[in-house]
Amino acid sequence: MLKTIMRVINWSGDKKSRLYKGFIYSFFHSLFVGLPIVGLTYFLNHLWLDANGLSPIDPSVVYAAILVMIVAVAGRYLFSYLRAINQDSIAYEVTAAERIDIGHVLKRVPLGFFEKNNVGELTAAITNDLSYLEMHAMKMIDNVVNGYLMVFIFIIALSFYSLTVGLIALSGVLLSGLALTWLGKKSRNNSPVHAASQETMVSAVIEYIRGIALVKAFKQQGVSAGRLKSAFAESRRINIKIEQDYVFCNCLHLFSLKLATVALVFYSAYSAVQGTMPLSTTLMILIFSFILFSHIEVISNSAHVLNMIDATMDKVAAIKNAEFIDLNGVDKPLSDYQIHFDHVSFGYDEQPVINDVSFFIPAGTTTAIVGPSGSGKTTLCNLMARFYDVNSGVITIGNTDIATLTCDSLLTNISMVFQKVYLFHDTVFNNIHFGNPTATMAEVVAAAQKACCHDFIMALPQGYHTLIGEGGSSLSGGEKQRISMARAMLKNAPIIILDEATASVDPENEHLIQQAISELTRNKTIIIIAHRLATIEKADQILVVADGSIVQRGNHQQLSQEAGLYRRFIKIRETAESWALGQGGTI
Image (cartoon, rainbow, N blue to C red):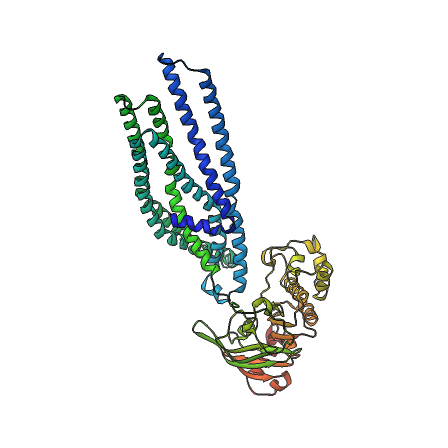
């Protein structure tokens, strides 16, 4: 528990001084909590002496008692307020910075990181886990540190009146501490299991929501909900088991404190009867015995939560310590945009995908990459953008090995348009503006006009300020594709990678997309993954990929006259593009 507390203190970073100030304010808060009891004891002693005719009560004693009460209440709330304004917001500030840091980290890791860590795990870490820290970190530190601080102040104060009373109270605290240590060990064992069940549950929920259209289409609500229900049931089972594991430890912890309370009452009452303890002191100890351990009683829950926080911090640290793909990269401007693959090989884990590939793309030319599904076309483009590092060989842009560049330095020179367009749950303007955060409104509009999407944007309810649904759900496929083109145009990078940019576009929008591509690719170095003949025929160079290797290369005229995969591909595409529903290929 102490180790986790120190870890949270270190986690607070440059806000550590505010945390320490909070501890000081808590110390004074504890003093002002105990002050009324001491003052009340003093007043009751004078009242008892006056009632028994031993010493008349002085009015000044009454005024002093009232003053002590007022000062104590005011001091208690003052220092409670000072502690709160220093400590309570620390976790919110630090977790906000942590989320931003994790965002920067995720931009710099290879895409393989997201294959080893599924979306549910990452989502749970960034949302649920950091929220757990946000909500509980400072509260648990306050419960533990200030709870023990208060009880030890009270024990020291009571020891001045009776050393035996102080030892009884201390024994209760120590026995309680042993029970909490035991509980902490159980909690450390249970925390990873609990975290894993939460990740599974989040993954199942995300998967169910993402596939809801398919679920409805195939009427498989029961089947698809099976994993979701199983995840919920497992989470419930684990949570119940964890609570059951804690029952005995928690009971022992509370029993130790209650036993100490009973012992204090018994000893002080016995001492008063024997005449070895003044009645006023007995009354003070009796009052203290019922509030002395109140702040420690809640620490059993804090011990469990602190161990959960420790496991959460391990998960966050694992993400933040992920190896950057550009760890040793440098920021370097590129002046030449020719691309050269030199004996490049790559595989996902132990599965080879690209095998000893070499090719050259001159600056300012268009290269089309064609081949069957799974041949490695998209992987080649991902390697150009350094989403992954090659296993062997070298990729250079303008005679600069891209492995020596930072990702930001490299990707400044590359615009990518994907087959599956992703738009943020934001305005149309911000989705286009994402391509160049320094662009003006006029530049955004100009890019939209070039991408042939200005007219439909202006027809939207709020024009460029219309909020797009998550993933662009409120737009058609062609509209989303054109907005992505506008975004790429606004970036105005010298190298353009188009990965099946027109593959799923309807014929009505295809000419608009082709027009947008023509604007986007003017005077650029272009790499296109495509199946449509109209796009491939115009390429300066065509690379035919099969099983991770380049099996043919040349222009359309050369390859169409050469026996091999490309000519077979052309025949298949011509048949597919001329095909119509009906007998004999006609309607």
